[in-house]
Length: 76
Image 1 (cartoon, rainbow, N blue to C red):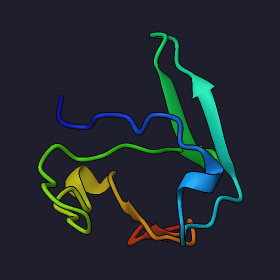
Image 2 (image 1 turned 180 degrees about the vertical axis):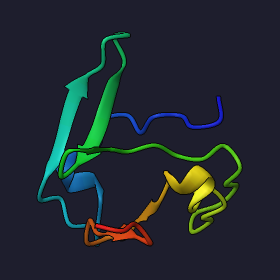
Image 3 (image 1 turned 90 degrees about the vertical axis):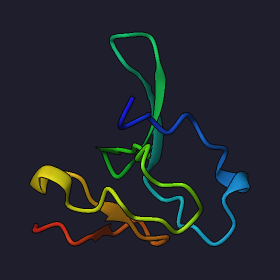
């Protein structure tokens, strides 16, 4: 999988990250997924260590999310 989903994250488990807007939902395929402000959150299989952003801007669709829940590089 190139874009694995971010599984549910406990709000108290994310030091330094704004958790306002954290919501977990059940996808139609039965997988639970984390969202921030209604944006589904994924990781990129090409990222190997914390801070990697190799998936940034891929296909004009995928953008990193900053710790304050802002999209990085996405047009609004």
